[in-house]
Amino acid sequence: MTNNETETAGTSRTSGAASTTSNSKVEITEKVRVLCLHGYRQDADSFKNKLGSFRKFAGKYAEFVFITAPHVAAALEGSGEGSIDQQRSWWANKDDGTFKGTNRGGPAYGFQESLRIVEDAWKTLGPFQGLLGFSQGACFVGLICGLAKKKLTSIRPEFAVLSSGFISGSLVHMSAYEERITIPALHVYGLTDEIIPKEMSESLAAHFKNVEILEHNGGHYFPATAQQKQTYVNFFQDRLQEYLEHLELQQSSNASFIDSAEEDEGGVTDANDAEVAAVTAAAGSGMDDSD
Image (cartoon, rainbow, N blue to C red; front, side, top):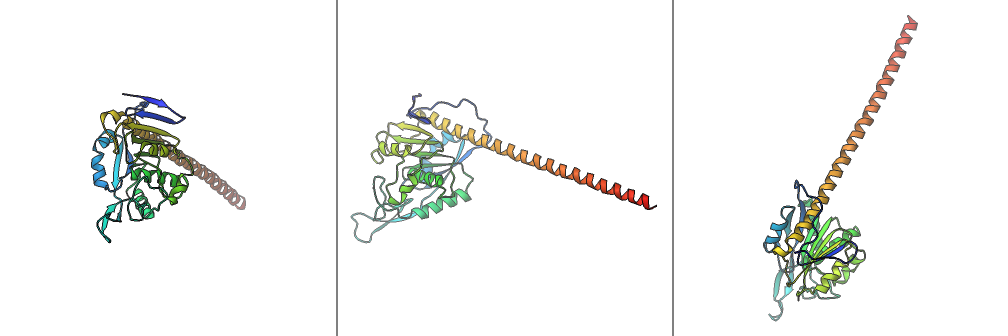
């Protein structure tokens, strides 16, 4: 089922269904590689397992690599003073060391450490072409895209997938949203999500120019049913097409550079040969005169 509606230039919306299929077929010789960031209190393994069906849909075109957020110490509510719980979180935005997506004006404890972890993974586990995130991970992906736009991180994503994403309410993150993001982005959210209401995900999507939106009728989860399959396939097929075209242009450019260098070297050699021949002839003529 396909139900696409163009809202603005470069933006399309799909209600739990497929987006327009690509006009050209992709010859599968490579895959794009995607670094994946889980949600609050998840880890790499749990997120990977939850995305099993999604990875099956998109796995022909993309390889997904999962990493885990560091522990953030959080005070356990109602369990007595000094009780601590070690939770997985990319950062905390409340003074008790916990995180809530709807919190506004709070801190961002641990964010710089997590950014360094993702930057290191991007460098050491890469190369990568894209980023994917769910919930807090999607918020993080949005922040990284904004920082990359301003050249404030070493990460340079070429596309992004953001599920149940939102704009960070932490004050230190506000500058990351000053410029709209131009890379292709697929934003996914549930119409009945009570943890991150769809309006919050729509606000994040508005910071991207080249946007595709996938709505589903469920809540706070990454949807991967047959209804969403074609949207994912089309998105990653397009990203792979762009990647292969980029590789082809790069190889062509390198070949042209080598050919040009060889021609220049050949021209210099010819000139040197001519100069040597001229000098040799002159020397020979001089010896004839002396005889």
